[in-house]
View 1 (tube, one colour):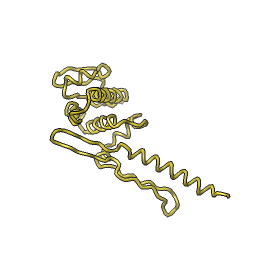
View 2 (tube, rainbow, N blue to C red):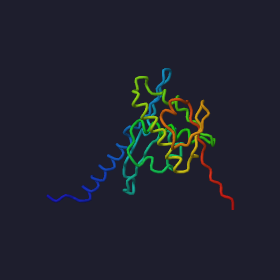
View 3 (cartoon, rainbow, N blue to C red):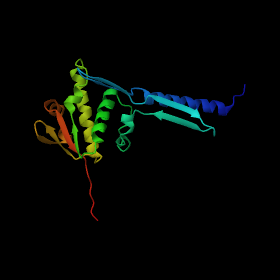
View 4 (cartoon, rainbow, N blue to C red):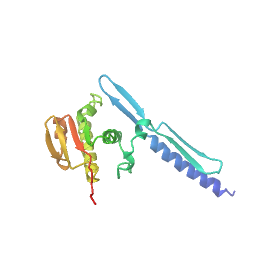
Amino acid sequence: MVKNYNTVGYFLLYCKYIRFFDQLQRNSLIQYFTDNYYRGLVTVPEVKLYKNNEKAWVAEIWLAEELFNYLHPFIFEDLFKKKLTKDQFQVLFEIIQVYSSEDLRKEFHFKQFLNTYKSSCSYQRKTKIKQYFIQYLFMLQKQKKINEQVLLLPSNQVYQINKLTTSHLSKNKTIVAFEYIHIKFM
């Protein structure tokens, strides 16, 4: 039996697209929990793949408006190249939300963010979340998106990002970073 290669080739390509879009939608639910509040956000609610009138493949991807309005994820280097855990994605999404504000002063209300996790969240998991937060701030600093020093509140202490530890985050409520501005005079 002779198979039509084009049909088999398109089918295999179609299967690859489906696997890609499945991975895109997997873990796309962001949940915020507090004692008084719950919010769930599906960041990629719909994906379509179809052939148009010219027989070309067209992909339509719907994004949550909250995610679509943040242009910065597309200028951050290397943050979305590997598969992220749910906690990594939520920390990164929080950082992007704050970073996307127009103010040069970026206030990361870390304690408030950490309180969105259920009270049953283990100590080890909260420590790992703090490590992710520090790791992403360090990456932004290396990419010259934020300055190398941060202000910790309410202690009013200034620290180099590369010297931050999880205990610093445990003792403070807010991390204040400043967007890096490079001004070149001609």
